[in-house]
Image (cartoon, rainbow, N blue to C red; front, side, top):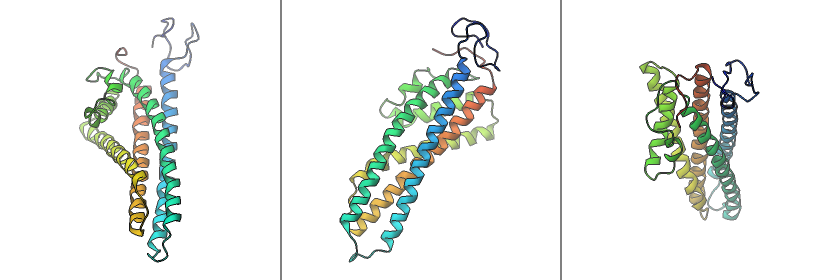
Length: 232
């Protein structure tokens, strides 16, 4: 591929341009994909850990009677989990920014042409209503355009992308609902823990499925040289 700095041809097996020493863009993309993959893994680890911990709390509440229930203690415990959700949200924002940078670059170097302008890889996430269905469609098209799949495998890719998006939307909704839950009664506390467990579990699943998306698209694009110039 041509060097973005001097225009000399960079062999795929080298990291820097032989003429000027500039880093290869494909190597930059590989580093971006690895960094995003690891950050998504940390998101999944944190979310799944919270889910397991909340399941233990739910088990303790199941063995508690209304007479022995202490709302103050449970409220304090749930407040700690709310803080964990805030941390997870901040981490998700950082991960999302990195994901958009990765998707932007992946869109510009697919094997086949992707429908829609490259700007939609960022803009689709911020357009009301359209951001409910455009992002997974773009991710799916970038994945499919990065390799040539037979029809059965295309359906499998679609299932993975839709499962990722469904879990992500569910996680966002449950994470917003959980902070408003209270623990005045035992029934309220059990319901709050169930909401928190579901929110953490869906967030963990979404992060895990996103890891699969990033891994496969990055691997496909590193194996196959781009057949067209990057879209502006």
